[in-house]
Structure formats: structure tokens, C-alpha cells
Amino acid sequence: MSQLQATPGFNLQPSAEKSALVSNYITDFNFLNQYLPDTYEKEFERYGNRTIASFLRMVGAEMPSNSDLIKWAEQGRLHTKYVDVTTTDANGTSNPTFTVNDAGVNNIAIRIGQTVMLSTGSVSLKAIVIATPTATTFQVGCYSIAGLIGSGSTYSVFVYGSEFKKGTNGMEGSLEAEDVFFENKPIILKDKYSISGSDMAQIGWVEVTTENGATGYLWYLKSEHETRLRFDDYLETAMIEAVPADALSGAAAVLKSPGSGSDGGSEGIFYVVNNRGNVWSGGNPTTLAEWDTIISRLDKQGAIEENVVFLNRAFGFDIDDMLASQNSYGAGGTSYGLFDNDKEMALNLGFTGFRRGYDFYKTDWKYLNDPTMRGGLTGTGAVNGLLVPAGSTSVYDQVLGKNAKRPFLHVRYRASETEDRRYKTWITGSAGGAQNSDLDAMEVQFLSERAVCTLGANNFFIFKD
Image (cartoon, rainbow, N blue to C red):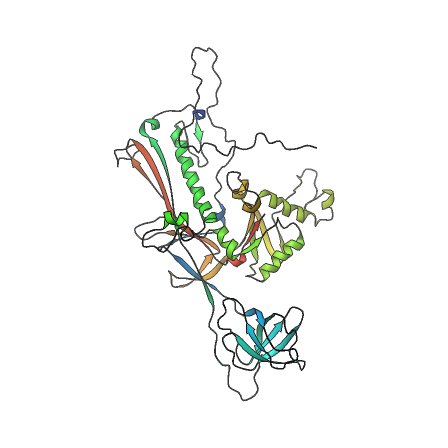
């Protein structure tokens, strides 16, 4: 049986060293040897485009913030349902009393005169509230002469209407709109590149290039631009991976600022979706039945029409194979999708998306494939994909003091009229054009202060091993 060999593998420690390596320069300077090697001046880009940042640029936006704390409100449900409701009355009771035991519920949103449905999952009954409810209890009159059924079980209850007899007063009490408040804190990211003035004047034998087009025979140009590219990647991956520091943790001891209530850290996208969103674990969904489970959950949330799944290569192939199997010829490998089967046409074995209740578009996420980042993780640390709802949502912006449309994912960076910390870079030293220090070197400083806001996390899905 053929097998993919482990060699050559991939280099997890390329040129990101603190100092220049001997391997970066040609060392064969034996002029007593009459045979000189034939050298290539230009670097070969064997890893292609090495940057992984693009995700937030595709799905989000950036906007300023002028506070250490970012807060927003998200709408609660319009209708209320309680799922842990019990009674001590016996079956057949005409006017049973129920107690709501749901966690965090101190005052129930049920009023006299409202009609309710109670269900144990196997039996259900309809009734009308006949007495003014207390904080967590309410009494009903059953519509059926059979009275209470399912005694001893746990009920769920929701209001479906109301009914009053002629000549009575109106509804007692009123309900206030429910909002759920969330917050996040920005973090400060920094990086630096330093090169002595003498090394800046040293010419190299190899013409270097970088992803942003920098070229030349001065090696420090490559290192400086790679530092910049690496910092750009960190601006995105920090927003994806950030977690808040627990009080009294080792990170909090280092990051807690004087006079600040923050212990450091921030709520990144993965952290928020793991805690407030939907989590699919145990492998990738590879059948329509499994996707129907996902769709059923989305129905119970915001029911966003269009969604994008950012995924790794294996998950993408699993979706392609699932969709191909729906074709009657798929098992024979003769066709994927719809095309004319022209002999001059390449066989397309992939799909860009599908529709089943909602539109799902898929795109490869380089961050999940890169072996130096998430692509090298397996088991409990592996993330195979992230489902992100498309479009924007309306939230109450505390800074603006009004409702505003915001993308489900967006970055807030610190800025004011005098200081913009979205992306700061400056040069210090006495080399490279800088003349603000007696240091015989050029130091390029990078700084940003930002946080990501994940709105409507209940509409997101994270797919994990």
C-alpha cells in the first residue's frame, strides 16, 4: 500500500530568529579554488504567501473607540419560555399551582388572564392563569375537565395568548423589554525590529523579497518587512485567540494596570463562540442529517439567511464529498455538480457552497491550515471551522447613545482626536533616517490597541475535534 512519507515535512522555525543566521549568507569564499559555484541571486519563495491574515478583513470592519471598556446591548427574546416547572398537585386537580425553578429567574413574566401551554414532553395541557402570580409561582385553571396530567414530571411552559370574560378590567401589570449586556476590553500589542547602523551598510549576495513587494540586497530590509508582516498577522490572530485573564492568575499579576479593574486579556472570537455560541464537537458534520441538526439549532437562534463557513482543508473535502454523494453518479466518480462533461473540461471535484434551509458558503481559512499556527494542532486543541453569519445586526452603542448597525464581527481600536492607536509605527535611533537618539542603530516600533466585538454569538458555530 502506498504511503505518504514524512520527508521533507515542513520547517517550523524558518527565518524568525533574533539574529542573522550563518545559513543566510554565502560562506564559500575560497579564492584559491579556481572553480566558483554558480549562484542564484534571488530567493526562491518555496512557501508561497506566508501571511495568514485576511479573515477579519473579509467578514468585519474596524471602527474607533475611546474607552478602556466597550459595552453593547443585544435584544432578548420577544417571548418567554420556562423549562424547569414543577407542581406538587395530584393528577386531576382542576386548579393546580406550578413553581418555576429555572436558574436566574426571580420574577416570572406570567400574568393573570394569560393562556399557557404546559408540556412534559409526552403530555401537554392548556390552561388560563386564574390568580395573580407570585415571584416564581402561578395558579391555572385547566381547560380540560380531566384537569392536571403528568404530575410528578418536569414541565415547560410558555404563554400563547390571553382570555377575559365580558365587563372585566384590563391586563394587570406590564412587561419591560429585556436586553442582554456584553462587554469587552482592548489589549495592547507591540513588536520591534532593531538593526545596528553598521549592519545597515552591509551589502548582501542574495536579492531578498517579501510578500509586500520589498526587494533589495540589504538583508535588514527583509527582516524589517517580515517583522511588519508578522505583526499584521498577530493583529488578527490575537483577536481570534484572546482570552480574559482570571483574577489572581499568573497573567493577571503581570497585566493588571494600576487603577484599572481589568485583570488583562480580552474576549477573542473563539472564546466567545465557545462560551456563548454553538459548539459542534466529535468530528466534522459529514451527512445531511448532521447538517440538519445544525440547521435546526440555527432555526432556534437568529435564523440568519446567509452564512459563511471558514474551514480547514479536511473539513472542506468532507463537505465536497457529502455534496457529491447526493449526485446519482457520485459513487462512480463520474461527475460532481452540474456541467456538460466536455472532454476538454477539467473535472470539478469541489463546491463553493450549498443551500438547505439557509445558504452556506465555504472558504478555506489559511490560519487553520498553516502548520505553524492552528494547522499543527490535533485533538482537543483543534478547530476545524467557524460558521459566521453574514450581514450586520442592530445594537445599542453606548458611545453613540443610539441604535447602530454593526457587522456581527468587528474590531474596535483606541483613538481620539489627538491619538490614533489603530496601527502605530515609528523609528528611533540614529540610523535609517532617524536622528532622535544616540543609539547607533535603527529601531522600528509597532503598536496597536484593539478588541474584537462578537455580536450575536448565538448565531455562530465552532467546529472542533
